[in-house]
Length: 175
Image: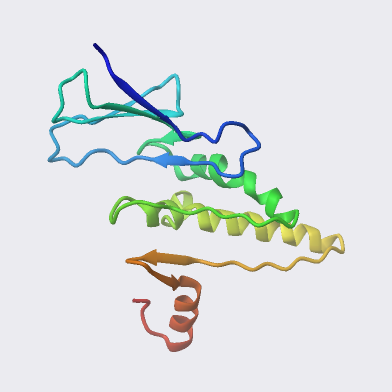
């Protein structure tokens, strides 16, 4: 008898305030178990298998807004996850995008990235918002922007923006 657990985290409809996306990484080279299964025809689902269980048990299927895998580029993730927030924010609403995961899972790469086409969501969002603000200012509009970069680690909240400013003023590295 096949037994599958299906958990749906898609938020139900397009007007939902909370959307959950997943960005996966390939398994470690030393991991001989293939524990993930993607569904090419349904990019909202991922199946996770428990290698210690019988093949008919221990399969869990999860549904999200979208599942991205390691070959997905930063630009594609930005377009799907962040771009819809730009007009929302510029209309005066608050918005929050955060990365959650264990240490070493790729949160910093997804959010900050590297240079060029590998830049992450934060540089792309800032570029888009500053560009839109520049367009509004040319037409006589006025905008103000407040941005926060927070890290929550071991039940401690750290303001990364403040750490950056202190580093810039003091000339030392950010710890």
